[in-house]
Amino acid sequence: MSAVCTWCRKSTRAPVAVGIVERGTGPSGTTYACPACKTRRRIIPMADWKHVGDGWPQFYPGPKHR
Image (cartoon, rainbow, N blue to C red; front, top):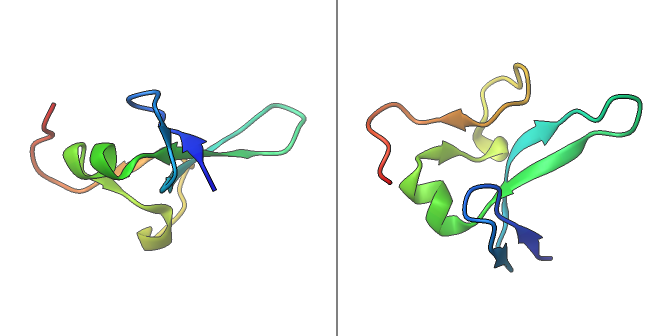
């Protein structure tokens, strides 16, 4: 599977699901990050979420690297 990273906008063959996008009356979608952006921005993969909350990406505590 490939997807476009939400942060760097590059296509990746190893996307990591990191959030949920609500689309009005249609079905929800998934937000993806490439492995590099996931690590650099300290994004928690959806598979590791303790709770879904509002579906926005969740981040590990600590400074974010740019």
